[in-house]
Amino acid sequence: MVTSTIHEGRHFLQIPGPTNVPDRVLRAMTRPTIDHRGPEFASLTLSILGRLKQVFKTTGPVIIFPSSGTGAWEAALVNTLSRGDLLLMYETGQFAHLWRGVAERLEYEVEWIDDDWRHGVDSERIFDRLTADKEHRIGAVAVVHNETSTGITSNISGVRRAIDEAGHPALLIVDTISSLASMDYRHDEWGVDVTVGGSQKGLMLPPGLGFNALSERALQASASASLGRSYWAWDPVIEANKSGFFPYTPATNLLFGLDQALDMLIEEGLDSVFSRHARLARATREALSGWELENLAISPAEYSDSLTAVMMPEGYDADELRRLILERFDMALGTGLGKVQGRVFRIGHLGHFNELMLMGTLCGVEMGLELAGVPHKKGGVDAAMRILAEQG
Ligand SMILES: *Cc1c(COP(=O)(O)O)cnc(C)c1O
Image 1: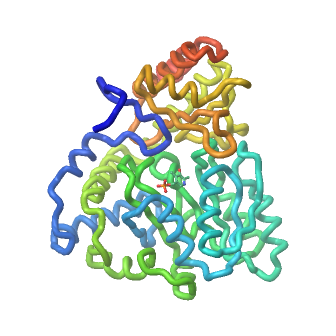
Image 2: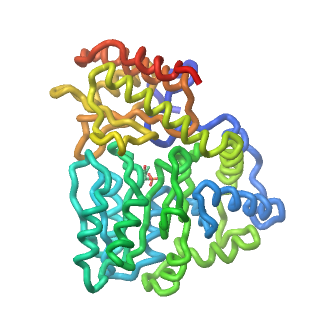
Image 3: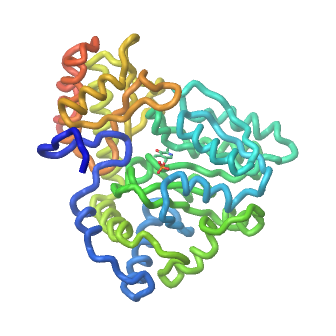
């Protein structure tokens, strides 16, 4: 193996995904691969699908693809829309931008609402655009729930309300790749038609699985969507899943891991998982205030509980700080993406993560700020400790 870094103790993987994989999940994945057409595999699939629905908070089908999140983005579009259909998308940040690229390469027409990367989706702008679309040309509204490039969470039930109040038939498609299983998300209750997920963030698995959760309306749309599709087609998966199988070879060992990860989430209880992330996120923000560094997110109602994007003081390079922290303390922090490259670094606090892992992370950041000569106030770490040591 070629590596310039010698790891002693645990590497700190504090990028906002892929996240730290629990030992229990890693061990489960080292089991010998089994026959994906045999009885043991069928019962594994059926048991996974039942619990996965609880995580998406849906009673409808959840499709598992052996894919990156990008594949699950593509699947959500090609199953519901026909060539030339119009898609309404919102510029929350780099992931929204990348998803738009996927849509355009698939030859959909995209109407793009621009914003400044410091705010979530403004439902009023969605409402206005849908109200103006008298001919109902817009086939779907596609938005990112938790924008991983900015640390900003959008109000999805607000987007649903905007669509309903406009009396518009557009489908609602939502990317939850960095929120699912770390932050509250409700596919059915929020009236989402397709929820896009990925394995490598809140679900605590390595990269390699993509998910689509579907509403009844999404299924109806897939019956008339005319774009050719094969690998990403939902129907054959739904059909094969009825008996616990897949139409092609699934990622068997990732499914062994998923089985454990779902057990862990259900044992802890989803509400406890969410409040743990809320507490760790609040302590992270306290550290920022202590350092007198600015959060890229402006509105407290939109602060993400899965990651925080920290703005560098003018004239200081975030990637230089990240490089130094990796070299000295063996901790990886998230780089600034797209428009905010070099201007922010991102602290991932999602997935398999606890108080002392957060304190190690924040200590690494504070020491890094000192070593890199970045102007800041001392005491961010202390401020975070005060939050974590609060009674009850
Ligand atoms: C990570 C991420 C993706 C991309 O997933 P890949 O597995 O890299 O294709 C998409 N959207 C969001 C919000 C993400 O955080």
